[in-house]
Image 1 (cartoon, rainbow, N blue to C red):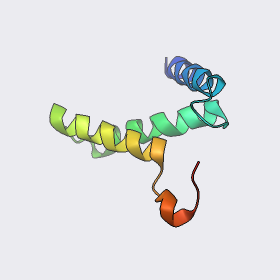
Image 2: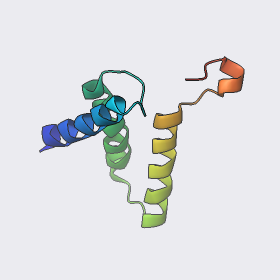
Image 3: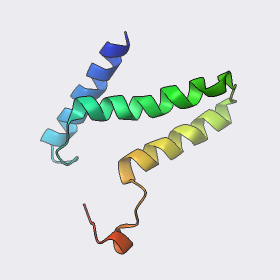
Image 4: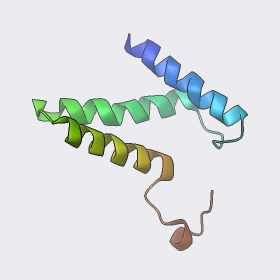
Length: 79
């Protein structure tokens, strides 16, 4: 089932690349990295999170993944 999830996300990312929304990168490994952030965090120490915490965590991880951590004005990288 997990392989199916990776494949689904990989296909979605590929479709966004074809539309020019995302830059070129290996979508299979990117899918693994993205989902790995979530899986490892929510399984870490078996902690329970309320839905408000979960939504905040999802928002933070998605923002970090999509936008990175470097300020484009500082890094000079405006991709």
